[in-house]
Length: 138
Image 1: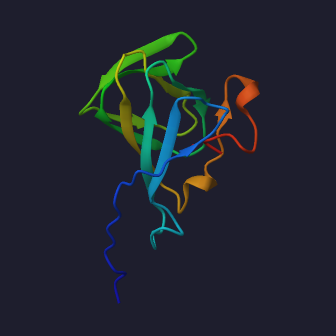
Image 2: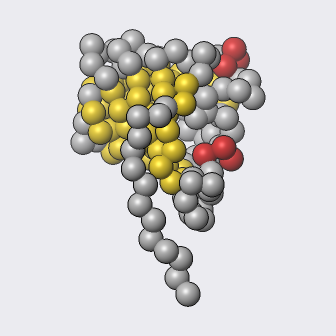
């Protein structure tokens, strides 16, 4: 018997962390929300000036930019422009981050090949962010 198809709605409730002001996220597909197996995703929003700092994790990841213009951080001094409609593939163990240098909200969908986002262990380039309560441990 096949598992049931499930539909989740984007909500007005967002998770936040003092560690990364101006970032908020919510889960869409995640164990405990859906009966997913091997796949998780959600939304992340960045206020103007906010940044998800340079980091890596062992899992590959996909960003689908749904709103705004941002700078994709791909190395310590390397950035690439991304905007609504862009899809970004991030290989395993690749340094990456994203910064909203615009005056408008930036939003993207992130996708991981994990049952839950909580399985992803982020390693930040700036050691101040490497804590168990980091928003990305999302």
